[in-house]
Amino acid sequence: MLAARMEESGTDNLLIASELSVITAYSFARTLGLVLLEPSFEGWLAPPTVDPARLQATLLFSACCSSLWTAGGLATRGFAFSANLSEPDAIRSAARTALAAASVSLICAFASSMALGACVEPFCADAALWEQPGARVLQLTPDLLEGALGLSFVLIAWRFSYVSFSSPWR
Image (tube, rainbow, N blue to C red; front, side):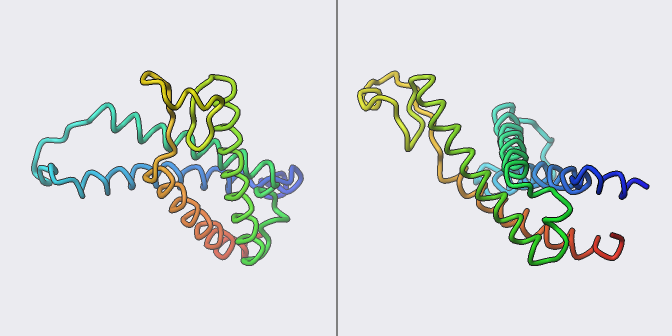
């Protein structure tokens, strides 16, 4: 009954929910990995503490990637049943969604640099802003780009396994 209702709408809601859960889990695992690799890591027996800046960065990464992935999936119809019927179709659909999400992020960076008068690397509305000491520069850091690239590969693998394991029940 539920599967028939989801097929009528054309959108696989379970796929959307599972991918957003994977994004959230990935962002917390990424932060845990960064904490464990720090030289100041106190060990497993130390009392747990929460660094508000790190928690904010983790939640911001998760929210940004979730919204970009959702926008990319909706733009390419990557969440449709017809796009995820077989493993090769699912991989192509997830790759298109990842490319669309990257395109949406670059468009948002460019638009915000134009609207805010800020520099968003690699875009800058006015070249003179680079030279001002108090300029607002929003950077696309290598750490952020590595995290987004790793997340794309994880989501492509997740889409493949989702279709592989759920296809007998469709």
